[in-house]
Structures are given as structure tokens and as C-alpha cells.
Image (cartoon, rainbow, N blue to C red; front, side, top):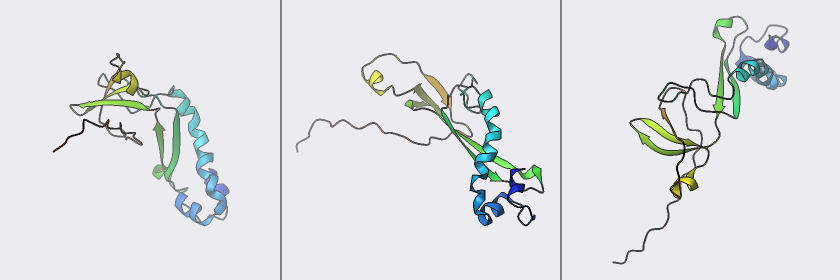
Amino acid sequence: MQAQNYTRDGSYHTFEEITENVPAADGLTYMVSTAAINYIRQLNDIIPDITNVSEKRCLPFKRFKFEIIHSDIRNKAVHQVAIYFYSEPVTWIDTVDGKLLIAYGDQRETLKSGQEVDTDLIPFQPYLTISSIVLATQEPGPEKKL
């Protein structure tokens, strides 16, 4: 419905056509994303498609990004959107049989000191992507002389 505000004469039908030809349509994604807010609130800050080995939704998110993939005002069946969820940092401890052993939050110092941390085991699965990573710095080993 929002797209019709930008193409009153009916010359553009797809999201791509509208955004390429109508400069004022830059805000279209934002306007449509507001319709998704109620759905996102129902998730209680837990990413919907990611489960641990017990098939329990487990990965919290703090931010999300809404994107219109494709839309055509002539055919509702081709509307496609994506919602990207971003978790707070997690600590990747190891990979065990194709599953990520993680601890929530930055637990590097806690692990270094030998303290216990709560963990979760998350299988690799569709829609799970690592969007950024901080690699642990290697501590210099003893010098070798030849």
C-alpha cells in the first residue's frame, strides 16, 4: 500500500522500479518495516530460527535490520522481505561435531582465568551467519634460537 503513494500514475510496479525512479521513495523500506514491529516484539528478543541442540530458541538479539527483497504491487504473492537479527557478542569456545560451543557475552577473560561459564551448543543451520568476529590475539611464545 505504501508503494502506491510513490507511483500514483501506475508507471512503476516493482519495488526496484520505484526506488530507481522516484528519489522520495528512499524511506519506503522504513515505512514498511514499521508493520513488522509487532511481529518482532512477539519474539521477546530471541532470534526465531536459531535453536540449540535441544531445539530450544536460545540466541538473543538486540538489533535487527528490515529489507525489502522484492515486491510488485500487481501481485502480493511475490512480496519478499528479510529481517536480519544481530545478537550481542558471544564467545566462540570450540566447534564440536559441526556445532558451535558458545558462551553468551565476552567471556574470554573468565575462561582464561579458568572459571566456569555457562555455555550453549548451537548446530550450524540455515539462516545462521557470523556477521563479525574478533580473533584472540596470539601471545608471543618463547623465542627460539638456532
